[in-house]
Image 1: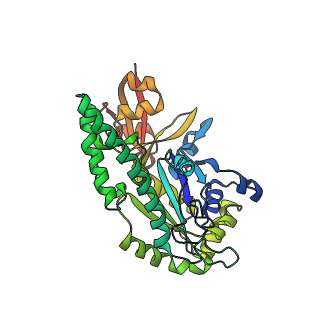
Image 2: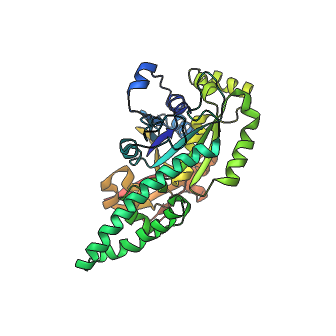
Image 3: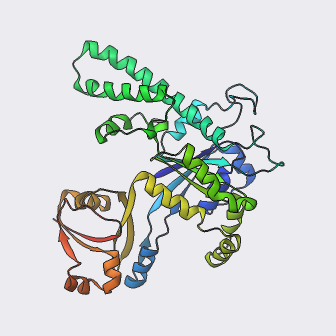
Length: 367
C-alpha cells in the first residue's frame, strides 16, 4: 500500500512525513528533493502479544509506504504566489500523485507570521477546494481525450471492451462536469476495474489531515465537525494532528511520548490516526500467521477469501490450496492455546470460500 502526502507549501506535509516515519531530514536536503519515501511498520498490539506467546525468531509487522510529495510550488500556473488561481499543478507533480493508492491532504489551520500561508490567510475549505479542482480538471482532460478516441474506434471496430468502457467514461464525464470528485459517486466493481488503468486522481480515497498548533487542541473537534458537514463523503475521511508538537514527540521514547500526549490532552498520535483511517479508506484489515520461526501480520482487502489470503503469503499456496486452519485472535487469547481452542470448538477447518476476518490466525494446508 502506497500513500502520498500532498498539500500547499508551509502546510506541514514534511513535518507529518517525518513525524509518522520517525525520520529527520536536513532542511537543505528537504528543499532540493522532489519527494521522500519511507516505509512505516504498522503497530499492532495483537501481533506483539502473539510474539510474546510464541517467542519466534522473527516478528514481521505489516507495512505502509509513505511518500512526501514536495514537488508542488505556488505560482506554477504562471501567476504570482498568493494570487487567486495560482495553485496550478504541473504534469510532473500530477504524474507522481497518480501512482498512490490513497492521498493524505495536509491542510494548514495554524497561524504563524514567520511562515505565512501562500494565500496570506487561513481558509480550510478554500485550500481543500484548490486541490479538488485541479484533480477534477486533470481527470476531465484524461476522460475527454479517451472518450474521443473510443468513439472513433467504435465506428471502425466491434470491440466489446470498448463498448463496455464507453458508458463508464461517459458517467465519469458527467460527474466531473458537475465539479464533483469521482470518489463521491458509486461505481460497481466492474466499473472500477475498467477505470483502474487511468489512475484518476479525484477517484482516489482521500484523507484530509488538519494541522493544528498547541493553542487549538480544544478546537480540534469543532474543525472536524465543520468539515463533516460540508465536505466529507464515504471515500473521504478527516483527522486532526498537531504537527510541531508531534514532531517533538517523535524523538522521545514511547513512554515519554505517552506522558507528553497526556499532558497536552492529545488522545491519539498522528501515526495511529493515519493508519486506522487509511485502513478504513482502503477497506483493509489484517490476519496473522504464527509459529516458532515467525509471527507475522498480513494486510488484505476486506472480503478476501481464504484462498486469496493464502496467495498473499505465497503464490503456490493459492494454486495448491486445500484447507485453512482458522482461529480468531480473541478466541486464542481467551483459551491460551490451539489445543484448548480445538476443545472449545473455536478452531476449525475452512474451505477456499471462507471470508477472512480481521484478527484471524490462519495456517494454510496446501498440496
